[in-house]
Length: 195
Image (cartoon, rainbow, N blue to C red; front, side):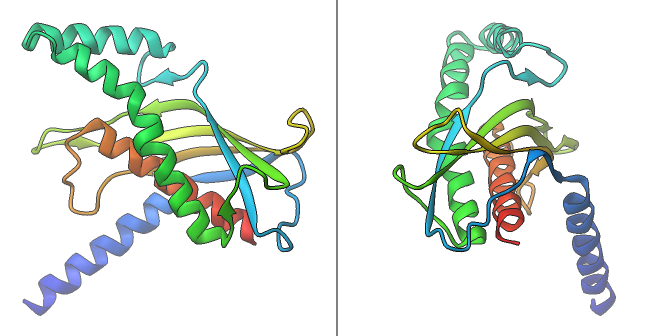
């Protein structure tokens, strides 16, 4: 029993280490402003021109999945497509903000000096069918701009392969897996900005 606990702990540590190693944030242009004197930032999210899985265009992915689900059960695909878009505001963005504020020690305020614009460029929704799974992840572009003049880009960062999965593997819902990718992205960006 003792060796089983050690094996599980070793597996968990290795898994978490590999997940953190896979994700990468780097400054592409400019310089991240020193936010030590700031108490808050504003956040905004954009989803234009996203690639999803093997599809270059999100619209093609949505069409394919909608048709697939509607063939299995009338109306299921239409409900899925609606939820696909709604999850952004209801699940992804709040998860990002929650973990970002926790790890950056900043609050979210529309009137803050700086705005962080998180633009999702790629989504891998992954899957979990019980016996096999593929983890979700996202790629994104982060712009740090002046809130009063959003054309003034202070820094541009890239965030690659923010993973998303639940610790116990109960992420059968696409929205759940993807919301975890935004949580990971928020946490990582919060830590990155804080240092």
